[in-house]
Image 1 (cartoon, helix red, strand yellow):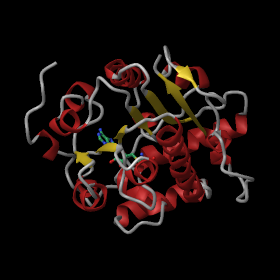
Image 2 (tube, rainbow, N blue to C red):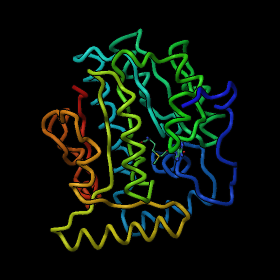
Image 3 (spheres, rainbow, N blue to C red):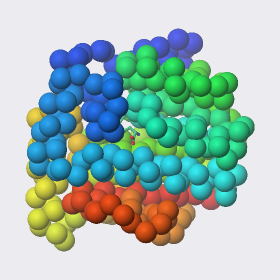
Image 4 (cartoon, rainbow, N blue to C red):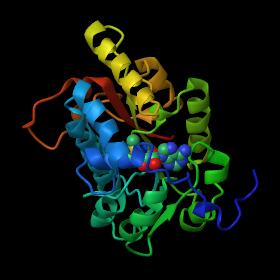
Length: 277
Ligand SMILES: C[S@@+](CC[C@H](N)C(=O)[O-])C[C@H]1O[C@@H](n2cnc3c(N)ncnc32)[C@H](O)[C@@H]1O
């Protein structure tokens, strides 16, 4: 591995308003303002087959908030590397972590040009939060990106966040290699936070919906794949999954009684939090 060049982080995916982007689609689902017609069209197609998609985007953020709060307040984690972090929203990783530990450092990595432009304003709110435009699918480049190496200390524990991104890497072997390279770079006592679209093999109706969702994502130019439980579990190989293990996001230490109804999408996602021994 060779260190990345200074300025590497300024490179990002090309800006194309005619095609949907994952960052802008997520922003539209979360009720943000940074999206265009192609993104809204992708959202409409998604909502037509999965009306719970907006609630599920929020479910993902709520899960992340609960886990970051737990790690910052109970596990003393003060470094966070949020890969594929998305457009800034209501509760970003640094806002949650720094509420519990004002010294917590957060590096966001997202190669969407709008995240670079709009995101920096919110995400680089203070000296402890920084944004890199590195391509997360190139871990050797991302890990040596000057923003990452300047602000995070890899000899100390880091929480590595892969929230709603690994299912967009279509080849399983490639996805595994990418996750493994990041995990290998972490010090003992670090954590992996990962959520992933799930293929419920034992439930044919939900499996059918999973295929429909994949086709819809494909049709909008944004690939997505639902994987089997053991495939998702394998991303945590060698790590200690915290209870309750790999589960649906609403099952991971909810804040209280559930008030909103569950949608089918709740059962098509799994997430886990694991410690590197
Ligand atoms: C589905 S969104 C998830 C956002 C956020 N993690 C969440 O859970 O709300 C995926 C994000 O990953 C970013 N992304 C996709 N491919 C990427 C890549 N190769 N390198 C860096 N970021 C990427 C997209 O721009 C988008 O913001």
